[in-house]
Image 1 (cartoon, helix red, strand yellow):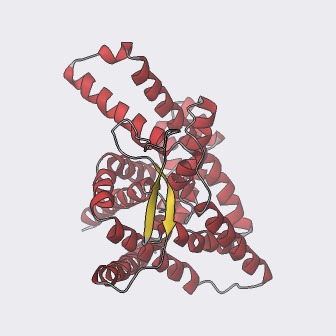
Image 2 (image 1 turned 180 degrees about the vertical axis):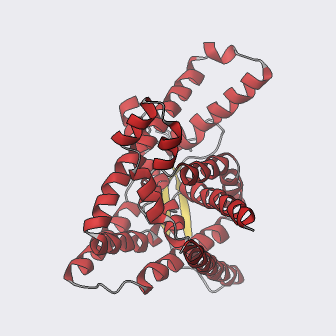
Image 3 (image 1 turned 90 degrees about the horizontal axis):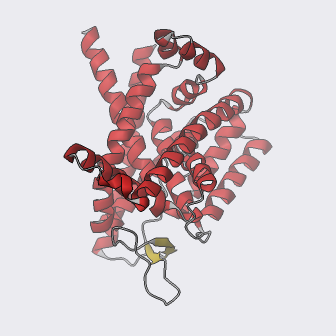
Length: 339
C-alpha cells in the first residue's frame, strides 16, 4: 500500500509539472497559479531556494546523495520532468487548441484565474492598509503590463539571458505570465518557437545520422540563443526563489496581497473576447515567423454579444473554475496525507 501511494505521489508530481509547463507556454497564463492552487507552491519555492552555496559544495565534493536529498531532488526532478514533457507535447496540443478553439480555451483559462482568486482570497484574513496597498499595486502592474505595446525582436545574447530570467517569473510569481512578458519584449517567437523548432530539427538530424547542421550558421545561432535562454531561465528560477523565500518569510501577508493583485490584473490578458492584433512589416504586410505563422503583437478586447457561442464560452469559464476547485480539493487531501 505504501509503495502504491509512493508511486501515485510520483505520478501526480509529473502531472503537476505537465500543468505548470503547459500554463507557462501560454501567453497570459501563469504556471505559478497551478502550483499555488494545487498546494505545492511553498514547497516548490523552498526546494529551489535550497540550490545554494551549500548544495554546490556537496556536489563538488562528490556527495551526490546528500546533494539530492538537500535540494529535495525527487520533488524537483519529477516536477521538471513533467515540465519538459509538457513543453514538447502538451503545449503543442494547446497550440493547436488555441488555433482551432481560441475563444473556448481562453474561457477555460479565464475561469481558472477567477477560481484562483477565490482560492487565495477565501483564507486571507489579514486585511489592513498595507495589504490593501499591496493588492492595488499588483492589480495596477498586472493591468498595465497587459496593455503595453510589444518591442521588436532582439537576439543579443545578454538580452536573451535577461529574457530567460524574466520568462520563469510565471513559475514563481502566480498571475505573472512569463510568456506574455516575452511577447512584450519582442522575443516570444524567437525563444519559444524558432529556437525550439531548431532544437527539434537538430535532435531529428542527430538520430538520423545527419550532422550537416554543424555547418549551418542560422541553426547554430538558434541553438546558441536557446542555450543562453535556458541558462537565464535557470538563473532566474534560483534567484527569484531566494528572493521569494525571504519575502514570504518576513512579509508573507503583503507578498500574498501583491500576488493576488497580479492574478486579478492578469484577467485583462486572458479575457476570452478579444481580437488578435498581428505584427506588420514596414510595407504593411503581416510578419511571419520561421514556420510561416503570423506573429502576435497584442490583443484588442471587447464585450461579447448574447449569442449561443458566448453562452457556450461562459460554460467553459465555469469549467475552468471547477478545475481549480478540483485542484484545491486534491491539494487539501495531499496535505492531510503528508500530515
